Length: 228
Image 1 (cartoon, rainbow, N blue to C red):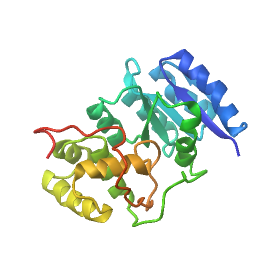
Image 2: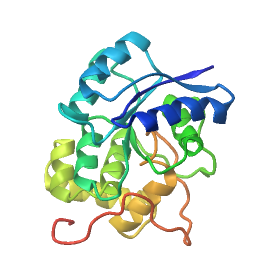
Image 3: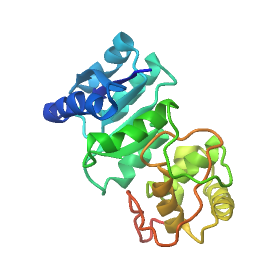
C-alpha cells in the first residue's frame, strides 16, 4: 500500500525535499501526490487527490491554517491532518489547531525519514515502535492529554473542549492518575514520548509506561499564572 500525502506549506524547498525524500526513505511506500503554498487551495487538493494524510504548515498566509484545516475536513472529514511547525513557542496556536481537529503536530526540523512513523501512524498503517502496553485512553481523554501537552491553560482547555473549568480540573486529575504521573508537566512529557504530539491519536490507544530518565518533549508547557 502506498500512503498518499498532500503538503500545504509556504516553503517550496521544504515541499520538494519531502517529495524527494519520503519515497526514498520508504522504498516508495510514502509519496507526496500534491503540494501548494496557498491555504485557499488546500480543500481543492484534497478533493482532487484524495490523500491518506495531509501535512499543513502552521505559518500559512491568510486565510491561514485554521481555514485550510476546515476546508480539508469539509471535503474529507476523517482525513488525518498533521500540523508542521518550525518553532517550539507556539503553544496557544497549537492548542487552537488541535482543538479544531488537527491530528497532531510535527517539527519541521526533523528529517523526512523521522516523519515517516508519524505519517504511518496517522493513517493506521503502522503503530509506531517502542510503545509498551499500558492502560488505555478514550479519544476524549487523548484530546485532553494533547491539549495539556500543547501547553493549554485550564481556561483554554475548557473552551476547546466546551466544558467548564471545574470539569477540566476534575478530568485532568483523573487523567493524571491514569497516566501514573504527578502533575501536568510530567503528563506533557509523557505525551511527547507517546508520540501524541507527533502523530494521530487513536481511540483507546495504549499509554507507554513512564521512563524516569526521559526528558520532556516538544512542546514544553508554559509556567506562570495562566497554567492552573
